[in-house]
Amino acid sequence: MKQNNRIKFFLLSGILLFSIILGITKGSVDLSLRELLLEQNRHILLLRLLRVALAIIAGSGLAACGITLQAILRNPLAEPYLLGTSSGAGLGAVAAIIFGALNIYLPLAAFAGASLTVVLVYLLARQDNKIEIQSLILAGVVVSVALSGIIVFLVSFYDNKALHGILWWLWGSLQVYDIKLLGTISILVIGGIIFIYTLSQDLNALSLGEEEAIHLGVDAETIKKYLFLVTSLITAGIVCICGIIGFVGLIIPHATRYLVGPNHRVLIPAACVAASAFMILCDLISRTLTPPFEIPIGVITACIGAPLFIALLKAKEKIK
Image 1 (cartoon, rainbow, N blue to C red):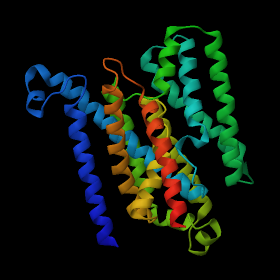
Image 2 (cartoon, rainbow, N blue to C red):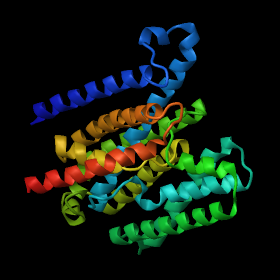
Image 3 (tube, rainbow, N blue to C red):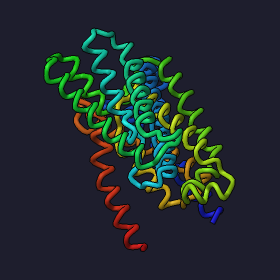
Image 4 (cartoon, helix red, strand yellow):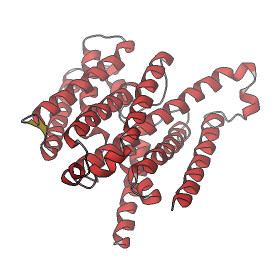
């Protein structure tokens, strides 16, 4: 079984490498690797490398968060935006536009909005210094819907082209405006994924249930708090740099689990590789489908992700 999973992981790595080459060489103008190395094309190479890097960071982070939340919440529909981070980030960004903040402050406002939303959801769900899973899910859904309503209200009464731009951004874009911001978010996401991976065995136990995990010697309550914090920070960081990209943190964990099994020591790295390739290919489609216009990547992931998720559900039903 281990040998089989190792082969599958190498295949996923090969797909990722192929995706990276496509992401670098294909676009509104197709250029070979040799042509990209020419002096006059170096700026195109840099832009595409940055997009590929952001696709890898965002895809890996969303997949790791999706796997973590599905394990600790024991809910197959759990995904990174379950705790309201997307709506909080959107409200923060819209508020920044209304108060005349420059574009450089938009990521900061989005990150602050997402972080404060997670704190609010946590406070609403906490009971006797414990996090009740059902209360957390309900609090996340309620807060997300409420903040989404506020965003629509603000957009309705504040007619500005900038708001149209921010709504487009909230559907997701891998265009990199600030290399330093990309570096900061990369450190945050990579550090978070490493932390989650070190708790792989605890996730295996928690996915069986809290009582079983406690019997196995896992401090379930403490581990849950740490993981909620880390996944929230990762998600907030990703949203602040590339907007809301749906379905990646939902379908990739399920597809990878179907491929390599439920062991988180294998599942997490495999899902990160698969999500990276998926994001690069979706970004390529968003850039090349209707040139010279770019479709928000969140639209592409939704159009591909929804049918794929249904297909996975049907496949699991047949297995049962």
